[in-house]
Amino acid sequence: MNATINLENKHFPVLLNELISIISPLYGGTFIDCTFGQGGYSEKILEGKQNNIIALDRDKDVISNASKLQKKYIERFKFYNLKFSQLDQIQLKNHKIKGIIFDLGYSLNQIKNSQKGLSFSDKGKLNMRMGLNDFSANEIISNMDENNLAKVFKVFGDEKYSKKIAKKIVEKRKDKTIKTEDLVQIIDKVKKYQKIKIHNSTKVFQALRILVNKEISELINSLIKSFKLIPIGGIIAVVSFHSIEDRIVKFFFKHYSEQSNSSRYFPEIEVSERCFKLVNKKPILPSLNEIRQNPPSRSAKLRYGIKTSDKCDFSEFREKFKNLVNVEGLR
Image 1 (cartoon, helix red, strand yellow):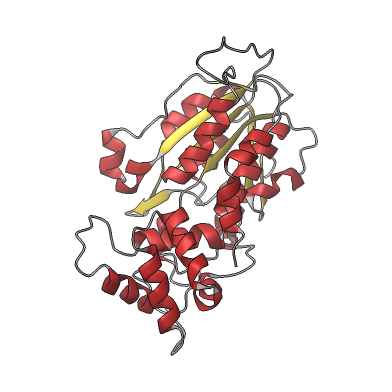
Image 2 (cartoon, helix red, strand yellow):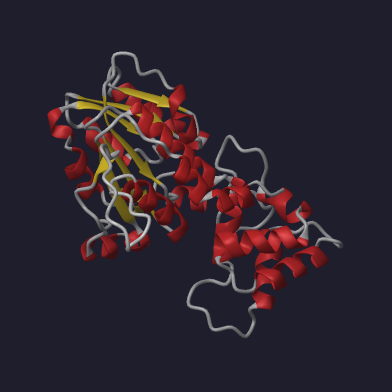
């Protein structure tokens, strides 16, 4: 899932220059691209003749892009059709990993693919599966009870009218199978007189996409596994595109790079080893020039950490977002 937009057959990986400056591939090393997509990050890194790329993507439709790089960089590029939470399944013999990168967005190619059903302008059966999924959006809309539907829309989409939309869905599906255009129509009717800057269906579609692809647990598990795979001094970098993702990534880096302090009334507790060093406390954002070239990049945030210790207990990390994971488990 690579947040690359294709304009005039050109690919624009978001925050590419900023990411490259962070991971410093000029000095050589092996990098894991956990969200290969259109291959923009991987291809740029492979320009350095001392670099190797191990790439992952759950979307089988990107295999053709990966095959092109495989032919060009036979000894230095390897692709796996895996979810990034499965990155511990890749073969790392003789590889010292210098950096692990994630781009959590969707490409224009994926959005335009009507079979994936990511866009509310599509027609036909609901889907939203990006690959290696257990269920589709159609199964959720057809079978999930009203209360759980409302909860999913509220928690993952921050949808103000989640209960009304869920109620209308349950009523409508008694008569027919709800297709993409039907869902859009239901949402439009509920929000008929509301003044909203974004498309009426944006939040509901985001919520369904997160649920179908288990984006929350995928991200949490992959960040923890990344920490375990990368050596001290290695970099983990993540480009996120919506507030839930960024909240998870921010906590992961910030919480495990600072001293713990249970109360402002007590002295700061000394921690012998922190897990990360943060060079940038705040996220790195796209430049105005990049936003002009690639408007979807406006919501991107790049955060990264440099590993400083092999010892880290991520139980607090899992506990912090347990509620989100529980909602993700609803069927």
